[in-house]
Length: 103
Image (cartoon, rainbow, N blue to C red):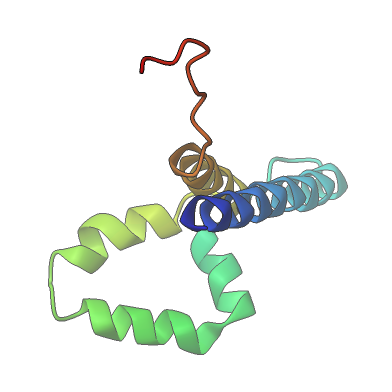
């Protein structure tokens, strides 16, 4: 059940990453230059209060926000979604069974 859930969420994140890539590509063509939406900007556009609460929660560990979260949130949203989705798909993969079973 857990593997199914990991694969399900992974597929949706990869699909969301491709949608974000298409949106960024469309915006880049319209602007005649490369434009990428950062993960932080996308998160703020979707749920600004959740981002603020996460930042407040991470303020307890002074090293967490500036050293880990800020670089992650400055990545393009499409790249971050695809990477996290692929990681979840890898964790939830179905392992092949051996053709030759040892009794």
